Amino acid sequence: MTVKRTPNSLSIASVLFLLLLATGAQAEKLKLVCNVDIETNYSTGNTTKGKEKIQVDIELVKNQMFISTNGVDIGFSMSTTQTDSDTEKMNSSDADMFELSINRGAKPESEVERSEYVKIDRNSGILFYRYIGKLTKTATGSCTKLDQKKRMF
Image 1 (cartoon, rainbow, N blue to C red):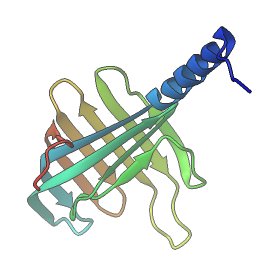
Image 2 (cartoon, rainbow, N blue to C red):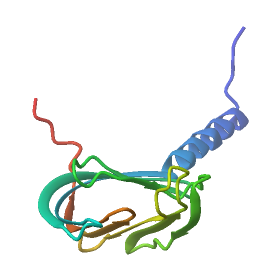
Image 3 (cartoon, rainbow, N blue to C red):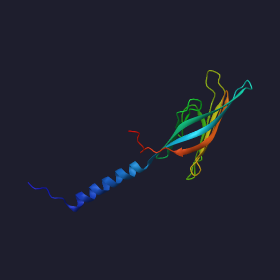
Image 4 (cartoon, rainbow, N blue to C red):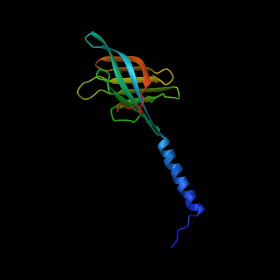
């Protein structure tokens, strides 16, 4: 028995391949390395300042955006996905910047309302982050794209 390829089977395979490519193209992952200055204002009136090098991961999947950092003093994780504690979420991102603002209600254990805001300029790499809750934490700095193809070994 001989199997013959017909133009239809090639067309179907081509269409499936293009669909797979299109689906994969909807996800975008960026890794940035940022040198940030951090200022923390406590409710007691005390202020601390510091510097930190952080990695920022940005992932865009369809209409969702996820931004997270691995910093010790300025670690955060934000997304456009709605959660039960979110009272307001605004994604003002466009081709020139990533911008996300989240307001969360007070937790049952008497914590105050919290808000987070992050903005990263895609052209200059300037980062601004602010957290307001029991304390206020602000981070500003500049980021560069992490080269994921660079290997040490």
